[in-house]
Length: 248
Image (tube, rainbow, N blue to C red; front, top):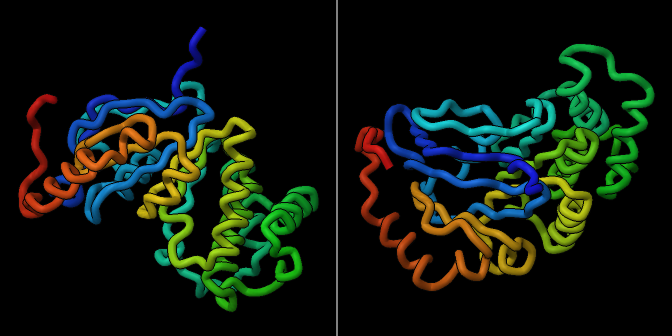
């Protein structure tokens, strides 16, 4: 018997303030798959990722997560969008990742804090567990965010530009974490711009230009013809247009 998809999209339409972001997207992320979402700037990649996590409302269509609860899905937003002014330590940030399963504002037990410490160890940050997150470098902070995902231990991992502006060592270490998730059977979806990295690490790719240009094996999805089509569509977008309601 074929297992149900981890995530299924049916004619999904997304917008920002009634302006088009993603048009009539249908497809599935198989359980245990490792998929990159890529495309030109403004292609709707981040909007789609937020919709997959349940944080962005759909204009049309539906997104199903068969057999999954909201707490089974973890989202890593772009690090540059996160406020690091809160007086939290690295250990605090990782331990708070358990809220999705134990409930917000419930105390974090000693066992959960020990699990958070172990997650920091796995990303090479255990010696900085007490350091305030505002005192971290970009690479150190991203390691902490990956440790938080490790502590959450969700079935589905959604990552938005997880390797942006990181040095080669940090990127290599965090790719190792990502490979571990894939080997453990987790469903991993990442928004990325680095096509060489995608070809090297991601078996499947969704090439997006507000609509699906290709959603298949990476080498096919990133063919020259598909990349050209995505580039052409990106040049003719009308950002002032209202979201369409034409059936796919």
